[in-house]
Length: 129
Image (cartoon, rainbow, N blue to C red; front, side, top):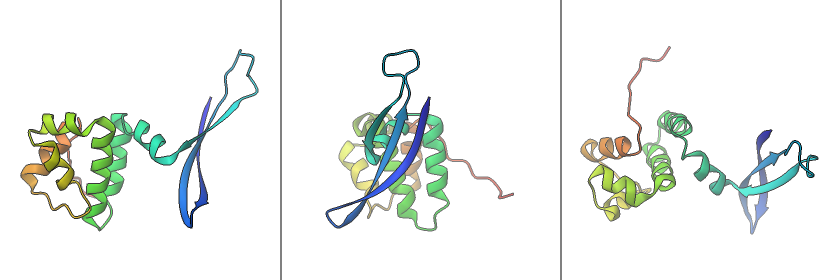
């Protein structure tokens, strides 16, 4: 049984988000359960390896009015899959991929679309319900 929940703690004056995953091993000597703390970024990186989770993550980021939110989310997806791998699939230099997906990145469609495809996803436009 897996249960994921977010926990917030203060670290050196800043709020750091941690994901706490409770893992219960049935049938083992430790069947009472084991609590394992994982930093949020590490947990997110693992989750973003799943194409379904990545798609939902990018969809949520795309709904934000600030374009940088989507670029940062796409960067996290690319980092989870390996920036060098995504850059090679997209046909752009790795250094350019880092630049394009930076907070100040301003990619053209001709760059953005191949990067999204290189992550195994596609951009789809739908009419709101």
